[in-house]
Image (cartoon, rainbow, N blue to C red; front, top):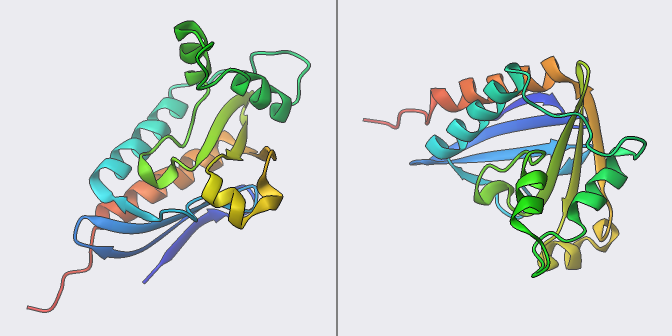
Length: 174
């Protein structure tokens, strides 16, 4: 039985059926289905990555937006200007990486997401980049989506997701 955690308009996760070590995990943010390309997560790795993100946020390490006066979407675009190009320096990569979030393996590698902390709230920016996704969803091309929510709400959803993954697969018939 699937369990929905959070709010799809801000951030939500749905944990579904297991197939041995793989678990169906659907994620939404800003009303967008993020795991539309691959929603079968390797449970142990995915759980660890989600748990680490929650711990990182609880520790207060998330950074404020790096470019004062820019919207979260404009900040996202600026961070991505040279990303993955031959001109991108290691320092630029490291700087951009400070804001990366939802970097939880193959299940989430179809979207680039950044997180910015503003007091007790978060802004999460999202951009789909795979050609196959953009061919099916041309309305997403070039769009940077924004989810804003209280930090404690995001952390609580992540912790609930970890707890759901801890339960693991339903025992099969003996």
